[in-house]
Amino acid sequence: MSSKGKVYFYTLGCRVNQYETDAARELFLSAGYECAADVTEADICVINTCTVTGEADRKSRQNLRGAARLNPDAVIVAMGCASEMADGSIDADIVLGTRDKNEIVTRVEEFLSARKALKHKSSHMRPPLSRTDVYHDFGTVISPEGSRAFMKIEDGCDNFCTYCIIPFARGRVASRSRENIREEARNLALAGFKEIIISGIEVCSYGSDRGEGIGSFLGVIQDIAAISGIERIRIGSLEPSSLSEEFIRGLGMIGKMCPHFHLSLQSGSDTVLKRMNRKYDTKVYLEKVRLLREQFPSMKLTTDIIAGFPGETDEEFNETMAFVRTAGIDKVHVFPYSVRKGTRAADMPQVDGTVKKNRCELLRKLSDEQEMLYAQGQVGKEQEVLIEADHGDMYVGYTREYVKALVSHDKPLETGSIAKVTATGNMYSALICKII
Image (cartoon, rainbow, N blue to C red):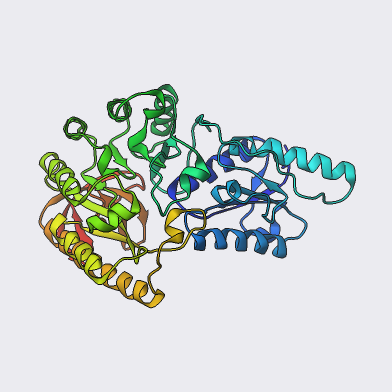
């Protein structure tokens, strides 16, 4: 069977976007297309856009223009959050929003048929964007890369933080059916994936659109844990305000749950958190950390922090630096605040760019110190490492706590297998390991 054409994919933004790009790739492959390794050899270029910050929006538009410049004959498809918020002003032949991406192949083929009939490249073909709060399911999505599988269970967000455009770009919370989640997990297990990372825009809100509490999310995790072949479960991110003691204790009873949690913070200053319209303060955050450590004593704790949020003073920034240590956060993903038009924070007094840069550097240095300390604390312990790559002289993978492990080449191991090792030392934040 001859190929219908070559499709090039490029993703900006978060893990959810990558999941949805993988889903679009599978739809094209199933329809008889093949993947292009480079934009210049493609018949169709799919750019999955991001608009979480002003800079992300700019890069999305830049990539769309770049694809058209490098390959003027290709059909340029914009999908994702920047497309949803573009209000018609985006350089692409086909523009799909956040809730109609599963129609991508149909839209492309309709466009190609129309262009063939007209014998020239037509103007933008943009259908009305859908913002209905219904989960649009791609079915099973198997990533072509990696030994761990990301699985999206929810879309949208109801939090409306003052810096974030995502509730407007993706709509309100929309939850996937538990049966479809179970089916994808079973298929991923059959495909050989041993670890699943549960993803979404705000996974702790799973089921809230159906009037369900966080116990519904716990039920999803229990469903996945019951599937033979799945040995590890990880959660992409947790929202402190959503966690209950009952939910955390429930996680502690799931043996396949990895002791690694990304607990969203954004700032360690209560006054900044209030300006951000976050639904918790530092006292609540510390209590959630305490409950998690009670169930998972060896856990690695990671978070996100925005440096230079509007109005952030030196005192407020210093509160954040101190809180990272107080909470025992082991790694911080640091982001300089970026103005996003359409959000309330865009109209607040802005922090000087040089000040933001300096604060980012201080936070990243602190994060490196914390992560190295955590790795040093793992030396001498037995670990289970999911092998992700063979570099010839060593295997590379990650422990259950999500610490990078460099494993000796003493015995043959297969990519995707789980090896029992002893951590004999550390190289910065990575463990040096020997197979048991």
